[in-house]
Image 1 (cartoon, rainbow, N blue to C red):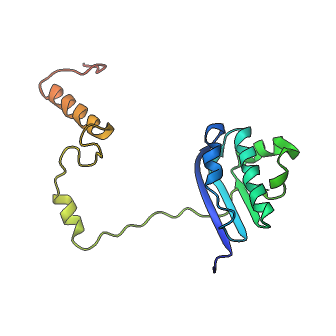
Image 2 (cartoon, rainbow, N blue to C red):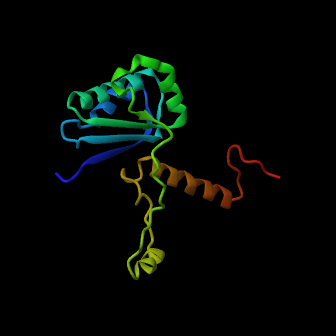
Image 3 (cartoon, one colour):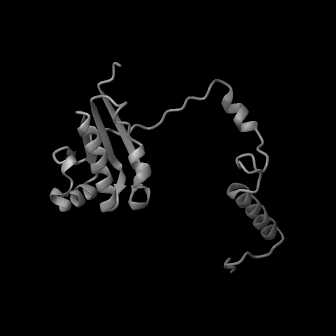
Length: 162
């Protein structure tokens, strides 16, 4: 298949409530022989999360694959406190996170697109998937209402006047 390694870059928080979904993120049977799970942008919040990580490690181990885990420093300290309670990932957990320098996203607009964007007029609710009823549309309506109150010389709840 040409791929010798796969890296999972994880973000967010792994904790007891989402461990079943977390375990489903990995595909030991379909992954290459070396898999890296980079948790540098993720928090492993509790014992359940570490035990789920151990179960994932066992699945890779049973298939004869290498599963390497890179944890943020705070999570690595938590992992060390667990001691030998995680035998299937013993020896493959490391800190600090793997060296992956952050690179800013670069987006190049096609020629002339800047003018089109600058001259475009968005209709209320354009960015709202629920036609003005969702959170974006509601915020737009609230802001328009606040502007009308202020334009009429009124004050808003919680607004301090001098």
